[in-house]
Length: 402
Ligand code: AMP
Ligand code: MG
Image (cartoon, rainbow, N blue to C red):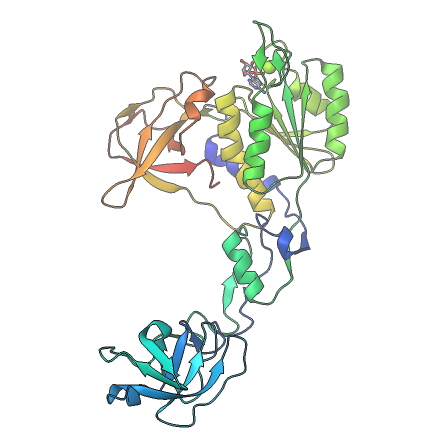
C-alpha cells in the first residue's frame, strides 16, 4: 500500500499544466495568475500629497512665519503648479502632486483663510516633507508586484489595475464533474425514509472546489448499478478534465466504481493509501488524460482526501509552484496505534509565543462529519509513530489553504 507522500507524488506526476487564457479584470478574482505583473510606473508615480491643506516651504514656517499668500489652488488630477515666493502657498488637495518649490503640507484643519491669505495656527509645529507620500517609495517602475502561480485576491485586483492592465493571463478553468454513488443517498430537499442517508458529499465537494476558485463543476448522484455507472461515467468523462467520485471504492458487494472505471479505460495509478481516514482512495488516468479521483464515501474521508490530494493537484495544474504545510504544536497527548498516517482534525489558535496550537477534535468514526464544523484543518501524524506528546510539532493542513 502506498504511503501518503508517494500517493501525492504519483498524483503530481500524472497532472498536466492547464493552458493559460486572458480574462478581463472583473472576471479575474479567485483565478490563478499565469503571468508576472510588473509596475507600470513608480508607486506613487509622483510625490503625492496625503492631506487637504496648503503646500508651503518648510524653512519659511520653521522660521516662525505664519501668514501665507495663496498663489493658486491645485486639485488631485491637476498638472503640478510652482510656488514663486518664499512666503506664498498653494492650496492643495489629497491626491495632488506636491507643488514645485514646496516641501511641507499644512492640513486645512490647522489654518484659517481670509482675503487670499492662509494663517497657520500659532502653536502649530510642522516637519519637513510632512503629509507627502514620496514618489517610488512603495515600489519602483518595473518591480514584479505579482508572481505567476498566485491566486488572485481582491487586493491583487487593485495591484493589477494600478499597473494599467485591463486583462490578465490566468489558468483555464478545468472542467470538473463530481459523482456521488450510493443507493442509500437522498439529496437535501427530497423526502427521506428511515433507512436512507442524506447525500452530503457532493455539495461539500463542489463547495470545497468553489472555495478555491474552481467553478466549472457539476454534480450528479448515481445508484450502485454497474450498467448505469458505466453509461453515465462514460458520458461525464467525455466532458471533464477531472472526475471526482465519492463512494463505492471499498470491498463491499456494491462497490463497483474501480471495475467500472477500468472497463472504461481509466488506468489505475493506485488504489489504497496507508492513512486514516481515506484508506480506500482510488486514483487513475482516463483515455484522454482525464484525472480520476475516486474517494471513499465516508464523509470525513471524502473531505480529507479532497483537501489532501484533489485541491493541491488542481492548484498545481493551474500553475502553482509548490505547497508546504504549516507546522503546529499539539496541545494534548495523542495515541494512534494503527500502522497508518493519521489525519486528525484540529482547532487552532495562536499562542503568546506566536506558534500555532492545534487542539484535536477527533471525529466519532469517519462518518462523523458534523464534528468537522468549526475545525480549521487537520494535523498529519506520522505512520512510524503511535504516541505523540503534547507540545510535539506536527504538519498542519488547513481546510481553506490547500
Ligand atoms: P461507501 O464508500 O460507498 O462504502 O460509503 C461509506 C459510507 O459513507 C456509507 O455509510 C455511506 O452511506 C456514506 N456515504 C457515501 N456517500 C455519501 C454521500 N455522498 N453523502 C453522505 N454520506 C455518504
Ligand atoms: Mg456506497
